[in-house]
Each structure stands twice: as structure tokens, then as C-alpha cells.
Amino acid sequence: MPPYARIALLAATAVLLASPASAHLDPAAHGSFAAGFTHPLSGIDHILAMVTVGVWAGLLGARARWLVPAAFVATMILGFVAAVAGIGLPIVEPVVLASIVVIGLLAAIAFPVPAASAAAMVAVFAVFHGHAHGGELGVAGAAPFGAGFAMATAMLHGAGLVICLALTSTLGSKGRLATRAFAGAAAVGGLALSLA
Image (cartoon, rainbow, N blue to C red; front, side):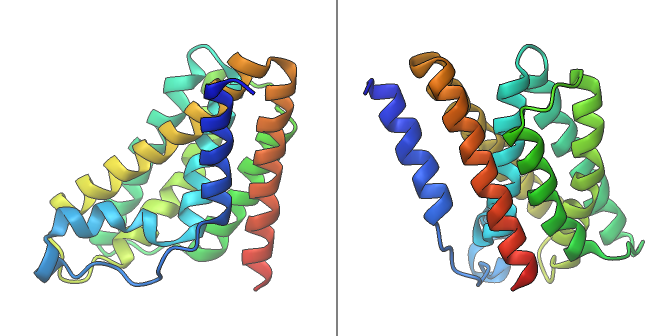
């Protein structure tokens, strides 16, 4: 197996087997940026959703590789701002969990849509992810906390994109199937979380 494929396989395995702590960093002790940065990394629901966005963007190719993750981050920030402003959203946690299943399934079947359509689809879910982050702001400063979780989210999207590109560039059609299987496993993980 080529080295890039090994790295991608190791990264995919680590993401699927990750069991992050449910505790968040205390902004008073660690700073608001650090608390925001670690926030998406402290829940498997956020990790699976963010990585799967990157995987689907990679499978779509071309401009979707940057447009889909960028749309997610931008609208996630809008959801965060809404939560900080006290604007409520219904069923935030169920939609966050549904995002893993839906985006995972879209990537698993390599659902072929234009980049703008894919961006719009993930943007809907991103608003709810951002709202969930804003609802857990606590004593953290909003701007540094938001910058931290936006950066972590972009990095998780990048991880999904790297997994996809590494597997498909080194293994061709088999790598594409492996990437789609990874996305399917993420969808199953999201379903399991929603039933827990």
C-alpha cells in the first residue's frame, strides 16, 4: 500500500475510533480561543460531521473542494452569532446529529450535485452547528471563542479532504470506494449517536 494511502487509512481509523472527552476547556484557565478551538474536537458528533463535509467536498471535486467547506464555516458563524444574540433555533441537537447521517449518506453514495448546491445543503446544517457552539459559550469571549472553533472546524474539513484525496489519488477507484465506505461508516455512527 502506498504511503499516502496508509496515512489516510490511519487518519480515517483515528477519526472513527476517537473517543474524545466530553469536558470542554475552561476559558478562564485556558483562554477563550483555546476553549473555542477544542470545542468541536470534544464531541464525536462534531468531528464526524466536519470530517464528512470534507470527504464529500473531495468526492465532488473541482471548486466544491473549497466552496463546500467555506460555506459551512461561514454559515456556522452566522448560527453562532444568532445564538450569542439570543435568537433561538428549535431542535438544534437533533439537526446536528441528522447532519452526520445526511452528509455521510450523500458522500457514501457520492451524490453528484453542483458545488453551489452542495454548499447550500451543508450550510443549512452549519447554522445549527454554529448555534450549538454559541449556546455553550459560557464565560468565554465570543469573538476569540468563535475564531477558535471556526479554525478547528476548517481543519477538520481539511482532514476529510486529505483523507479523500490521499485515498483516491493513490488507489484510484478502490480509494474512492474506501472513501465512500468511510462516509457510510460516519453516517452509521451518527445514527447510533441519535439513538443513544
